[in-house]
Every structure is written in structure tokens, then in C-alpha cells.
Amino acid sequence: MSEPPKADILLLRRHGRHWSEAQRQLLPDGVRDRQASHHLLECKFTESCNAAALQQALGYDYFYRQTQQLAAGELQTYVVSAKTPQRAFLARFGYTPAEHPGVYVTAQPLLDQIVLLVLNQLRHEPQNEFLRLFASQQRVRRETISTVVRQHTVTPWAEQLLAVVFGLQRLYQMEENAMQKELTVEDVMVIGDKLRKQAIASATPEEMLAVLSPEAMLAVLSPEERLAGLSPEERLAGLAPEELEQLRAAINAQLAKEQQAKPQHRRKSGNR
Image (cartoon, rainbow, N blue to C red; front, side):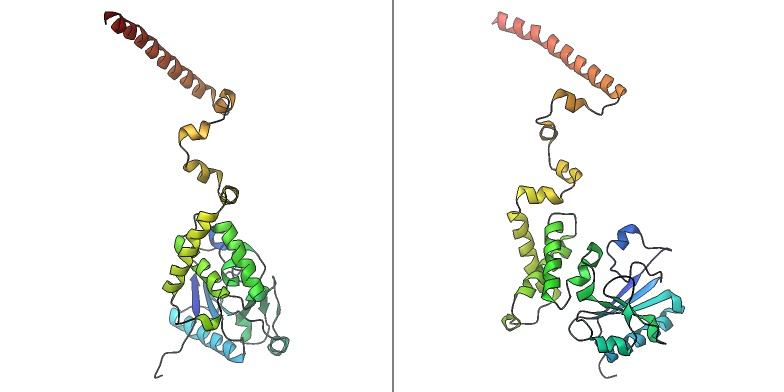
């Protein structure tokens, strides 16, 4: 061809027999429970899911398996649709709801290899947050962005990822005619990073504490601040007998040291 085809493809490769629990937390419904070692997601974010999209997916599925020398069961291919397909389209190709809302499968020959994911219908669950950010319905995007901002503003998520999320939030609020140029990923991240920093600066103590783990909160406190306000009994709670004995010995040693220093101070004062 004179020009390469335009494609929006996400490839996931699993190393090992199963997804780890940490990986499953980031994999959407329809993907996380399928056992193929390679997953190919064709993303349709700006156009409707139609017969041509299914043909493309079949082409990607075939040629990827050929180039990677994979058996049929080693690759699972998906069409990810930001827009909700019409019922007539689903009926024409035999797509019916599968294990979760927004996940469709078909028994038609050839197409039975292609799973359809509809972003407007995916459950409002943590594992679906990333894909739901690209749903066509504003209600779904706003609901997801609100959850991401509330839960992940001050968590150990990568700053670059949060910058993309906040940048998407701002772009969804802007009118299309307000766009003066085509934005790159870097442009979106610059916009989002400013919003991320503003969100952190404006967060109340209660909001910060609501998303921080006890370990994260203690990490920023000095030893004195950690013990402030605790009674002696509370400070010693949980110590093993041997730890209490070591602490008692250290206290006695410190008291003895202080007692030895006191007479020396008095003799120096008397000489003056």
C-alpha cells in the first residue's frame, strides 16, 4: 500500500500461566478472566462499531497469529467500542451479553474469535476505570473521572498516569471548537499535571486521610509526632516481654548516666 493503515491497537502479553492479582486489578471485564497468553484489543473510540471494524479485527487476529506463530487458543482478539452498537447490528452478527455488562460474544463462525467490549455499558468497577474514560457518554466519563480523582489523587499511582487522567478530564469539559490545534499526548499531560497539582493543593485533610494508608501517613511523621498524645500504656502496647526488658535496661542506663552528671555540675558551680 502507498500508506500504512491507521490502527489503534493495544497488545497485552501474559508471562506465566495466569494473570497476577495485581495485573487483574488493571484488566477490564471481558479480558481479566480469559486465559489466552496474547490479547489484541482494537480500539474504536471515535467511530461506530460496524461490519468493517469486525473485518479489521479478523485481519489483525489472523496476521498477528501468523507472525507470532501462535495457536488459535493463544490469542484473544477484541473490538473495543466507545459508542454503543445498535441492537440491529448485534442481532445481525449474533452478539449476545456474556459474563458481565458490556461484554458480548457470538457463536457465528469466524466472529466467535472476536469479543466485543462496549465502554458505555462496562460496570463502574476499579478494573474498568481506564477504558471507561474513553466512553462516548459524558455521564460515564464524568462518573469515572470523579472516582479516579477522588481515590487516586494522592496515592502511589504514577504521576504520568494521573496527568493523563486529569488532562482527559479537562478536554472532556472543553468544546470542540475551542481546540486551536491537534493535541498530542504530551500536551494532554502538561494540562493534566497542572490540574493534578491543583487538586492535591486544594484537598482537605479529611480527603487526604481518606485515601492514604496508615503506612503512608506514618511515613511523613517524625518519631516524636507519631507518639504525640499517646499515654505511657499506649506507647508500650504490643511490645514483647524481651522488648520491654531491653527498654527497661536502656531507661535505667540513661537514668544512671544522668545521675552521674548531676554531682559534676554542682562541683563546677561551687568552684566558681
